[in-house]
Structure formats: structure tokens, C-alpha cells
Image (cartoon, rainbow, N blue to C red; front, side, top):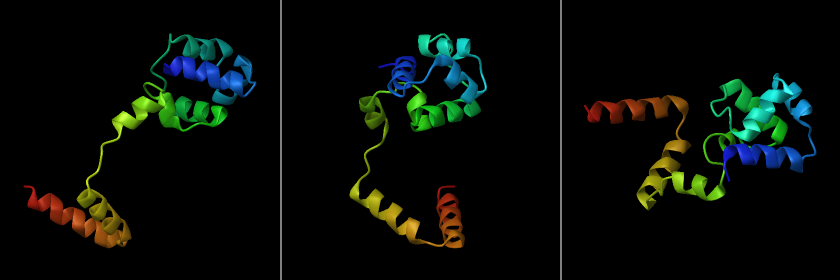
Length: 109
């Protein structure tokens, strides 16, 4: 499913009109129709955020292909070591996180 098809389908699922979505996003209904028809594919961030809110979806679902399979494929698989590093890093205080990042950056130079 393309992003434009996803937008149209989700709007209909919620029972919203083109006009309602347009007003909520600060655009005309003709612009919403163009989003749904795929004539406008490069929306500004503020419009993506507003549209995601109206459609009650994650903004990432409006960027690129909206299919669940594509989203799964785009996420890298983490090794056990990667997960452990992330878990330990997330347990650090903000100042300590900055120090660790600085050490890593300096060691890569």
C-alpha cells in the first residue's frame, strides 16, 4: 500500500471528509485529495505532523511506503551485544551519556 492509499483509507476508516482533514491540517480539501491521489508526495513536516494527528497514526507511517512489512525491513536487527550496550547506555544519567559519547567519538578519530 502506498502512502497516498494509506491516507485515503485511514481517512475513510475514521469517517472524515476531505474538508475536515484539510481544515485540521491548515490546507484546502483539494490539497488533501492530491495527497490521496499521490500528486503531492513531499509534505512539509508540520503538515505530516498535523495529518498524523488527524488520522491518529504515527507520523512515520506517512513517510515513504506505509506498509507494515516495509517498516519492519527498515529497522536494523540488533545483536545481543548491541542490545546490552543500548540497555546499559539508557541507564546512565544525561551527563554520563555525554561523557561516553565523547569517549567513543574520540576513540574513532
